[in-house]
Image (cartoon, rainbow, N blue to C red; front, side, top):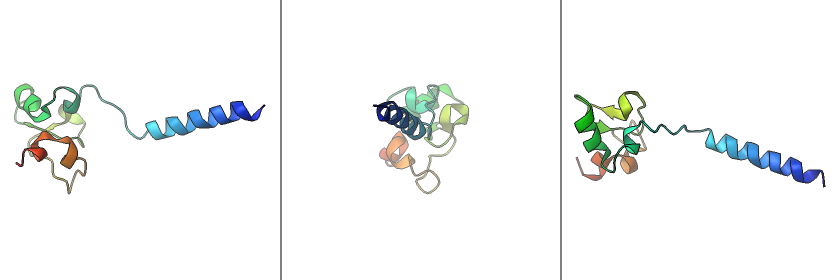
Length: 84
């Protein structure tokens, strides 16, 4: 029965390692509104686009994030889905 605590510890470590890849930032524009670009436009100056790859300035940036520099932009930024 000593294997069971070992398995639980291993599972907890594996889950922690997988979850440690990314920290959730509640102040990031992606978590502020359904339309993250609109949130940036209203709440920041000169940075009307939300980038899932930038942490500074709530994730708001001056130019729309592109998939070449930010692969997550295609699915996360509302500007990418709006076609512009």
